[in-house]
Length: 254
Length: 254
Image (cartoon, rainbow over all chains, first blue to last red; front, side, top):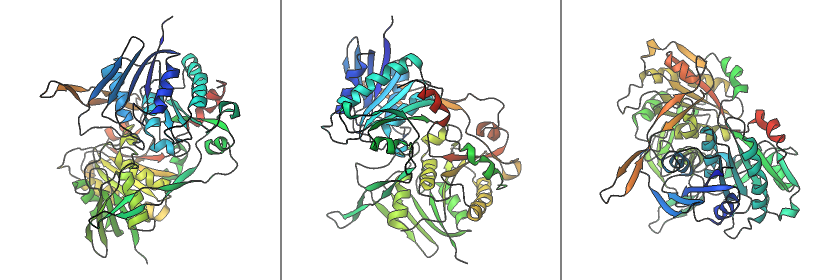
């Protein structure tokens, strides 16, 4: 049997503990190629590099594992991996393990999830994993067990066309997790609270901070399931058309 | 009657001809606040600045028009505008006029459309305008006429919750445009063709290039309508859940 070819990416950078944990699991399922940003790129969304050049750095090259970093965004990494490094599409793309939640609206800001979405756009079965713990010392062992369970299912069954998975994992021991649930992205948003400061010259500058607000209550959404100790799996699509709004907009007679 | 408060953004930067054309139209409908990136940010997607500081620069401040640039992405601009500059939500957010198409999958890469999507996330009626002409000398007069038609409709009727509009305009004189049609985002994608070069030290570097491929034929999608001389209006949502895939993913027994 041919081994599966597995592409690994993230947005916290190639040296983040979370990607090391995911690489460890990936190696149990096939030949691994890692192509990840050379520096943290959290919040890069679906950004790409079109007005600047890109570099690829080879970090490690062995028969069963190759590791590359690039100067680009997570989405750039996927494009470079497929076109310039692997010269073919992998059997699966796994992104993460992200240090911190990508549940609810975070999916749209997340470089980790944008890498998975780019994979889906290219027709690659793609999954992003995120642990609800920002700490550099986060314990990824439960997330690794979840990845061990989900990766072979995707390798076996594939994913529907145009769809990738957003897997968020609560900060718990594996035994404490109640199960894995498929659900929708919670209707929530960030309420920004910019931290305005003065630089040594007396000029204003700002740090973006904020708090997340969940507008949905008692629902089968990802935020609610995570709070109830479940792993939340949201199928994510890149067709952003609001089909349900087409009739109303049509009635505007634009 | 109170004048409308209109927020203007883009991703080509505050000094691009496209935003100047949109500001001109916006001033016909109310008090205008411009908050746009201080440099081109094409392809920035829904990126935000979370690990670096942000600056706001006041360029112009008059009774009916204020212009600010920021060091951030288009999405940062919207967050800064609402929280630190306007201290309230505008009556409408208009983004563009983008130099180049944001039809089909380009919506996900576009900073101009991400600004409009961020507006929708904040509950602001939001519209992005894009002209199918990348040229710095592009003729925005037809696009201005389209904006003149659409802006008052949105000010009057609002938009459905969680939805913004992606308006793409063909490179034609206004008289040559056949009409304005509401449609879905075409199922297309970029086929990347990286241009690999050697720097003066002999090391490889890459420029991202590519060509767009439309996988849909003879359909009422944005690409097809633009080719047939229509303005294409796609209602866009930020809930990325693939509801139609939930049953299949559930059957995987993850």
